[in-house]
Length: 259
Image (tube, rainbow, N blue to C red; front, top):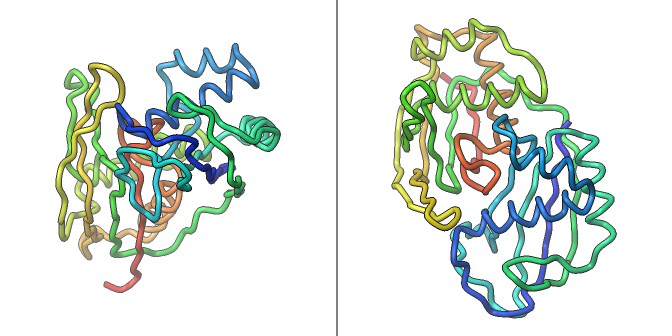
C-alpha cells in the first residue's frame, strides 16, 4: 500500500532556490525521518537499493518549475511512501507539527492531506499518453550507468516494474521479454530536455513534455496490456527513472482502450 501525502505550506520569506526544489523536499523528508528514527533514516540515506518513497518538487497551480518562494504565498509538495508502516509513522509525525523547516526557514503548515492507495487500475489499455511533469532520465547499469534522457518504452517500464516488484507484487519474466521485443511503441512525441542541479556539483538532464504510446496489433497481449495499465497507475505515485526521491520523473497518465 502507498501512503501519499500532499503538504501545503505558506512561505515565511521570499527566497530563491539555489538547487532544484525537489532536492529540498527530499532533504525535508530525511529530516522528518531522522526525527522518527535516526538509525532508519541513515540506513535509507546510505542504501544503494530502491528507496521506498518518491517526492515531487515544490509547485503552485501545476507549475513544477518554481525557482523561488514568495513570502505569504501558498505552495505544495507531495511525498509517496511505499511501506505502510513507514508511512503511518511519517503521518503521525507530520500531524504533530505546525511548521516545517524548508529552504533554510520555518514555514507554516497550511494543511496535510493523506491518501491510501492499494488498487492500481488494471484494464486492457491499447493506447496511452504520458505527460512528464518533471525532468525524467534513465540509467543503463551495464554501460557504466550511462544516462538516457529519452522516453524509451523498454527503459520506462523496466524502471516501473523494478519498483512495483520491490514493494507491491511480482510480475512475470515474460513481460520484460515482451518489452525488449518492442511490445510497446512510441507513436508521438513532443518533448524538450531540462538541466537541473540536485546538489553542489551534481547536475541531471532529463526530458519533459508529452509522449504518446501504443501497443501495436502484432504485439498485443491482453495480460501484458493489463500489467502495463497497472504499472502506469502505480507510476503516478512512484515517479519513474532516476532522481525519483528528488522529485524527478513525475508523470500524469491518460489511457485509451480503443485500437
